[in-house]
Picture (tube, helix red, strand yellow):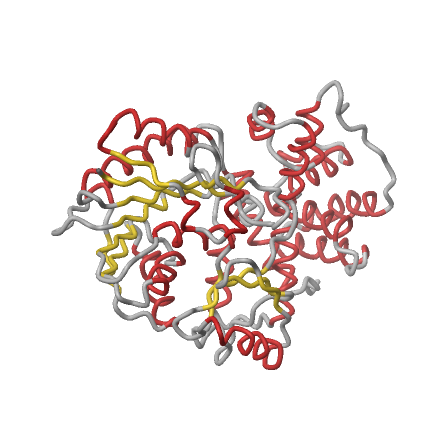
Length: 455
């Protein structure tokens, strides 16, 4: 039989299987696919993103529904059959524009195309039953078993819910968990090297005229929320380097570094270069900026991004920061450390299913070693800005306590307040830590950061 599954659905189902079964990163899989000439158009890509990331957000709840509908243990089924059932069910429950018939039929055809025709009847029967809303399955009692209820209702693993329940009350937990399942806003950072502050209204008009995209200003001058997904095709404002993609919380970090002309600044874990570019822009290119990362593919992406933005005077070095020995003591270090990423689960929902509790102490030990190495290489009077996309105590406050006790009078804690626009000062704690929790009214990612000066 000729397969009727659409290219977009097949790609979404295949990608979901790789993410759940093999621990792959969905963003990297999509980037790789979109660079290839595979016939996927803009509408296909939007559909794939909605289906893939939506299913990843609600995965455990959907799997629970499918498993309760089936008399067979789904763990005994193939990965492709499980994916067909879960993504099919997501379309039925959450994608109103997709007819139930299409969700069922194309899921069945996907299984056939994968050479598993014997399982097509099983997939068909389960999804048709779900489409009829034929059965109701009792959920855990929210008063007797609040953690189990929240875990199922908001599709988060039990270990995360139990962990956060120790820090937040029930209502705050619901805010955070619910927020993690929302589609994040399209947030961009306008390249101040090409768009001066006074030219921002003109840039927004250009966005609307040329790309039909409305924008909303934020309190941070460089930050805009777009109504629709950015255009990445050749010749667009993005490709011409007028802006880059970066969350509002992340944009605050370069302001904490506050780079000044003629300073030597090291971006210790540059990644794809989002904060690297922002440092360069805030200093008008008048700093010596060294961007490090131990991953070659990350540095390659960072270089490409800087070329697109027009930032030429940046030195890139492939190196583990723990092994890096500068020829000159730096004035400032940005240590955007590897972390659990529990503050950005809304943006990276696969993290809920790929991470475990053990990741927090493991990364905390690495973060402390990075902090110590960075502080000791600083010149006197130099500063290190530590940041993570997490608000976990072990990854933020515990490190600050350790540094202050370990170095004593050799270290001075600098308040972030003087370096932030007024609107964001409310995120600074009594301990002088920038701490943004998920579920905030501004739809910003969760982040933690502090500034240390070597005395």
